[in-house]
Amino acid sequence: MKDQVEMSSICGNDYLSVDYLRALQLERLRKTVAHTYENVAFFRNRLDELKLKPDDIRSLDDIRRLPFSKKVDLRDTYPFGLFACPLSEVVRLHASSGTTGKPIVVGYNEHDLEIWKEVVGRALLCTGLSSKDVVQVSYGYGLFTGGLGAHYGAEHIGATVVPTSGGNTQRQIMLMKDFGVTAICCTPSYFLFIAEKAVEQGIDLKTLPIKTGIFGAEPWTDQMRKLIEESTGIKAFDIYGLSEIIGPGVAIECPHQNGLHIFEDHFYPEIINPETGEVLPDGETGELVLTTLTKQAFPMIRYRTRDITRIISEPCACGRTLRRIARIATRSDDMFIIRGVNVFPSQIETALLSVEGILPHYNIILYTESGMDNIEVDVEINDKVFSDKVREIEMLNAKITRAIENIIGLRVKVKLVAPNTIQRSEGKAKRVFDHRVR
Image 1 (cartoon, rainbow, N blue to C red):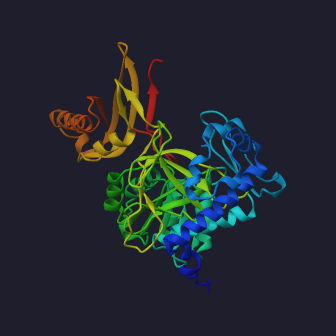
Image 2 (image 1 turned 30 degrees about the vertical axis):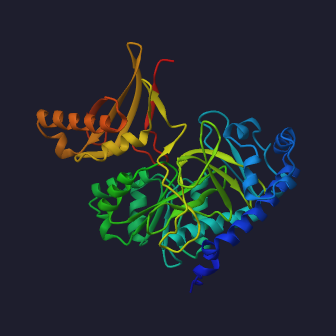
Image 3 (image 1 turned 90 degrees about the vertical axis):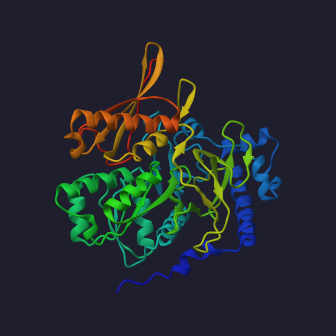
């Protein structure tokens, strides 16, 4: 019989007293800064320019004296310039896709992999999963951190893992049914695709044992969560992570779904004004900055994630003392400006999913016409609506146009398209296509 994993043995740090947690964070911060200063020339040079030494970090507030790290730093030092240990001690490499240039490369030693297993395991337990669950991991395996991160975290709590990776959707559905899968880990857009294909095969996911979805790797809205939960009968949890910090397992929702608990004994969070770099108090919205407190091979000091959120410090009904971050639906670098108005893709998704009769598949196309930038939103409608009279379709188009305008303050071109005409994603969904004249 499989050993039962005691939740208390893995999740003890979820319930530390705040005073003890802050003392632990300071101790780990000082060690991390000293370790990074001694072993990463890039970081040491930056501190020397500021006339700072590791011993100058005497309180958690002193973290504000340290310089920020950015994604460009990882690309400028490609591939191993930010590693804090020799490659002979690195047992795993991961990397981003590199679609906007050279990929960012991150490394783990044995200690780091144990930390990663721990935080992903804690994340899964936080949602209510246990060693009794069968977890299908449909994130991509390989250089992307999602698949292997979820895989080892699920094994860490003693769950049965089905390592399907992404793609081959019909087989995913077959295994989900035949293996009695109770939880799935993937992007929310891919799960919607799985659910869509299941319906085509005459399979109602509500009749299967699956009860939990752990969704991440792309921003998604509460409207998308509602659609997933109502159409499939599962409970959908948002998990947060990024390769530069560790991968999945930085934060996750508990069953109360009122923000994502940060495993802040390993990752210290700050919120800053993205324009000025000023640190903002808990409760105010800004850019999330994270510092790793326990990683050895690839520590990150004050990494600017570009994710927009706020820290929730009020107690959670689940009893965890870990602070939370609000669900991340926008990134500062996802924003585009049209005729002086700041627009986020999540705003358009919120408007679309507020209108009955459309499907959660859409493209946002930015284009230039007569010297002016514009937005076109192509959105699928369901079979019933598509077969309606032209007048009804025109009315739906007008309704969607008004819904978007009410949220972003701009009138956009809306194009309704037939079901299954917008390409589905088996990984991170690509929503925005920028064809503007520069």
